[in-house]
Amino acid sequence: MKKLILSTIMAGAMAISANAQEFNKFSLEVGGGFNKPMAPLNRNFLSPSLNLGHIEFGARYMFNEKFGLKLDYGFGSVREAQGNDSQSLPFDTKYFRLNLQGVANIGRVMNFESFTRKFGLLMHGGAGIGLVNPELNAFNDFDDNVYTLIFGITPQFKISERVALVGDISTILNGRQTVTWDGAEAIRPDISNGFYGANGTWWTGTLGLNFYLGKAEQHADWFIAADKYATKEELATQINGIKDMLKDSDGDGVPDYLDKEPNTPAGARVNAAGMTLDSDGDGTPDHLDKCPFLPGPASTNGCPVEEIREEIDYMRKAINDGYVNVYYAFDSDKPLGYSVSAAQYVSNFLKRNPGVNVEVKGYADELGPEDYNIKLSERRAKAVYDLLVASGVDASRLSYKGYGEDTSVDKASADARQMARRASFELK
Image (cartoon, rainbow, N blue to C red):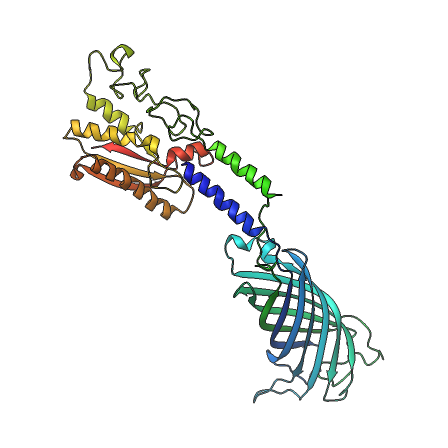
């Protein structure tokens, strides 16, 4: 048990040390894909559902794992829908935009790391400037200067610590757009300068790559912060304190911080709390009781003066009622040392009563997946089965089975969960 707890603590300390380093904050982004001008379009002009012709570049800086800023530049062209069924008049309009945007790492905000370390999600939004430049129709070569508002989402897939595959879908609103996307007419002929409202609407969909820059191992997009010790000295103090807690002063296999009787005599049989067992309740502890399952006075070393019942009746009741158990540490199928004597009691009884068979029944606590606990409980039962066979009991008199989780105990109690991690016996 001590080795298990100490190894767990040390693994946690190593994880803390590994994550204590700073994360990278800069990244470069490149992508390309489709655009779609939604409005305004003259009624004689149609745009395709997906027009291949958009490219964008960006640079991003993350203040922390969740929030940052990026500056990006996008450009491309929109054309008329083509094909045999298209009724659109031709148009060809170039555009560009330059935007400063805030970025939120939704993957970290929503704790995606609880179910994946490969997929992420960014949201972004901001404002900037742009240009719409028709090359055909009435307003060809007209430079339509606009301001832009942009909002979008960016799913991510981490390829490595330096590169991520990203997709992006963004909606852009053009303010003060004077002419239609097709360049055929002014949006509002009665307003000479066209300076009103966010009257141009379009969207882009791209696929691209993020390149992470910096000397640290991870970028903020994928960095998972952990609790950090202030100094190495503080970490050493914590570890030394844990080692002190794991001391076992009386050598009964139960560390002092769990031991409710830290001074039990050598060789005493104890339970998971380190308390001396008195299986038959006669006041004589098991390690001094020559008849540990038959109540009797101390004057006869715990054995009855006159045996009214056969030993098998007492043993059957003690064993079948769950007073004799072998216990295990968390996620282990190796019996804890202090409880191995329970298997020896059963072995001795079977040797004195050759007509009795026994089933070893394995159990687990409620932590972890149910199917895993079924297999773990069966391994625990098998371990005790092997102990009985090794002690000289014929295997034909033995059977074992894993019964999975013991739901009869309080799942929230560490002591109760320890009692659930056991192998019990049932005489047949």
